[in-house]
Length: 191
Image (cartoon, rainbow, N blue to C red; front, side, top):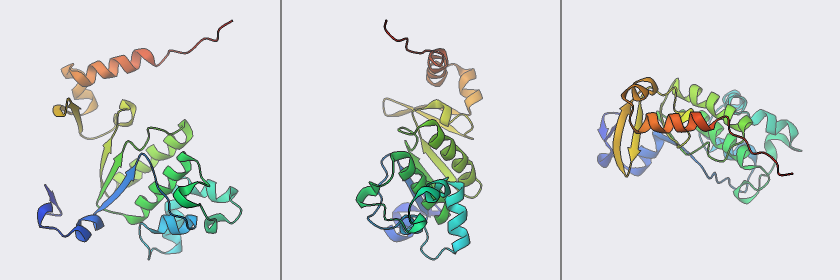
């Protein structure tokens, strides 16, 4: 595998990590301010760049309700914020870093619809200047991807766009049909 034309085995760890922004399912924030946790992406970013990343990730809404705004301490692990809010901070960090490669590993799994909406908007923003690798089980999150890789039993089963994978009627198409047929289900209360 090559990053920036260089075999990754020939890159120093520091040089490789400078090329990557990582957003995981379980976000860990440091016991510091909201601003400091976002600035980890690029410590020397300007105030305007910081504000823009926060706005795009929907962190500005969080800032507005916090007692000290960006200077609010988030606690060890980010305990002062919900899981979706921590995810938004992680996305703001990735936006601020402007790395050429962004890896989102199951980043939407535990998000409510509002936070997932922000994440999808951010993915589009990240894709404007980065290669975005999105690991997801939720098919709705990959529909717009330029290239989808379906992994089954640890092996690549299919590759293509959403449309081409539906057309070949393999694993992805079966999963899509199952998801689509269950989308109207709802639980009825017992009487």
